[in-house]
Length: 212
Image (tube, rainbow, N blue to C red; front, side, top):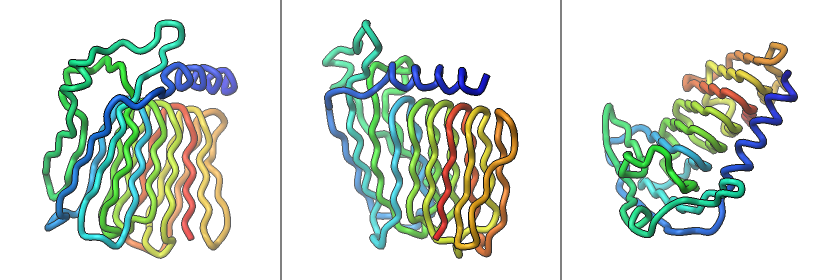
């Protein structure tokens, strides 16, 4: 049953594989008093990287979506209307592509976002992979289908929780390696020396956490 679910998930991800780049969008702003970033996307990949800068720098490539024999369905006007939509609430900046009326989108989003290392980072993604690197604030990832990878400093994180409906969860720290418990669904829970939390929830896919 687990192999079948992985097979179906692989077919789904392959069916919406990215093709040529249609547009590249960018957003840059000072971090100011902000404390976190949230990236919301439908289909694609999201990577958030913490650095020693004082700005938020986002770049997203809009790519064609391969839909099997049917190809990608979009018009030039649809692509030209797309823009990064920034909004702020509770001290966190949310980035998404607008207009949101494109729920059945015929494109793939490839995000790379650089933020100050002290930021919290959150990814909400339908299908694709989410990667969060080198932030010391809270990390949260919610995916329908795809993989989550988190890497950072062991000293920064306390509670670590990962849940996979179908898939594996693993945590590697200087103390060793831990695996999620379960048969088809896997749950992982651990406690580190820090204050920030890592929470990852995936419907179908793997969660890999490496803390050095």
